[in-house]
Image (cartoon, rainbow, N blue to C red; front, side, top):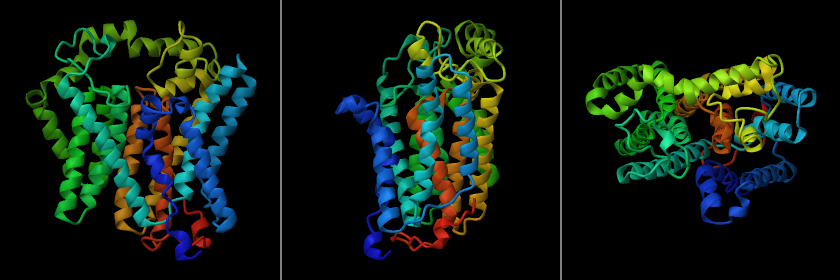
Length: 424
């Protein structure tokens, strides 16, 4: 494929990193009739472009050893659908939640070709997240009104929690968790003082928004990210976090109150009565009725169950517990195996990436993905299409990075044999 054919391809992936903006646009601004299907239409459009390139430009799909774990996971979910579906319509929707967004992985993995393209996607994603964060900070400064249930009645020091254009402080926090490590590694990786200043500004904006979401789960996930960044990038990051933690009561008393309240007897009573601990207890009770295969896809703990059983279901606030309750040990083990394989192969991809800049950038993405998985321990993050699509798309980007090390900048690499080599 010559240069003329190469230039211009790959721009469709920028629409993926704009997901959060596009989702808000179709939900609240215009063409709202498409709010439930616009992302499927986008996916179909990008796949159509991919198929066109395979047919006309002789682009060869890349092989990846992630294919087998994905097939095993999908086979398990389909098997559970056939053997344990109290209601086929509900089970079909539940299976869609489990399977649909994984396919974004193949777009990120197969349609990323150059170093410039990868850096451009990272920069646009950080810009988008920073705009979302700035609006969240604006909400905090103006004291946006929130539902009473977002803050425990005992937490009198907290007057608001921001949600930006997303609608949920916890999911906004999860988006910040995904973006912050990437922003930091781009700062760490930059050679010029101007670029370092820009990325440092983005880090501060994203971090400030994360703070004012008052999402304890997102905060804990971010602490894990700091540890990983310290171990993989620069240990001074960990020391900085320790100093910040020591100074938190004086610098951010509201944050300290929010965290310390978790250790109080009042929190335990409140959480058991109507919060996470109570929901987890009830989820475990449901799970015990069918430990091996669960109560059925879509039957408990997530958006599908809440829609069909509004009086009897709720969000489990733990993705893994939700998966276990619906699909039993069989489904949960398949899910955990998929995630373990994904992280292991992503780390191996970075280890063999020949470009130091791309490797460091990829580490930021990988740490963000780990943070999202950690946040899922206390939140149904993957119930939100935006977060599920971002997770799998950026996983594909990380696994594609070894293919970019020898690609010429500014051009789409030819569809030669090295692009289809399985290095993961």
